[in-house]
Length: 316
Image 1: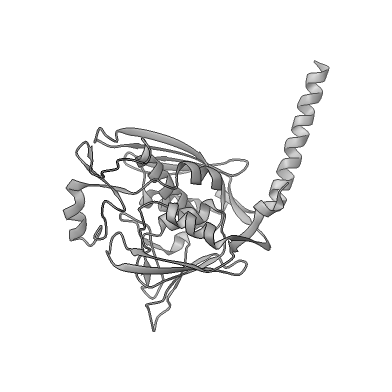
Image 2: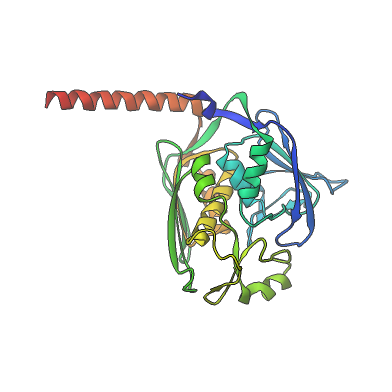
């Protein structure tokens, strides 16, 4: 068994980027830094003075889920649109990192998680000398709001995911996709999927302070049944792939990996955060496992079961 897979990880070197906030339109500078064992993922607003400027990326710190995931602390300090960065962090298995940011929102980059995957890989990933813990789901938990529904169900190992969407626009329509979350699967099939919006909604969103930094450089824009971006789509089903990407980011707000099966139907940030709240509200729904010990026991159990099957076959 490759024990490094089940150890905590951080990045080897500090790395930075500059971009525009999708909703604020502000120019944002962000620095990703290594962090010690058991730190978790912690955001730090470097432009805030006189108040607590640190916000751990945890589901209990989610304060707004309109069009993005926004976290905040008791001093009213907030950071929005963290889901694409969190998806990259989750997929690459990084457990400890400090994120310095000089504004209220992460930079949107190209609207996908690919630039963040690139940054993290350039920084390098360092295996730390501490066991990784995981949230193992023991009972199925669901959250439903009208035709939107999300569910977490028990699984033996890893995080497997299914997502489906339905939009009136024929160019999107019904799409569904699956993901067994590994760094390779995420990089190869999902990380380049961009956020999307509808031309008819732009004025309304900007009137309430959203989408002010959105452009054809960082989002797919749909007008009736037309893709406004001159280069078109990166995948024929880019819309559902991006919704899956969002879910990968939002599910990491547990603060540790999940051992579960996730199903999302027409859902978004609000639904996924409500699902995590419901899951973690009842300790009979889950257990925290030491991942190296858990995986060693699972492999031993699977080997014994295979041996029994082989013996039964030989006797038949």
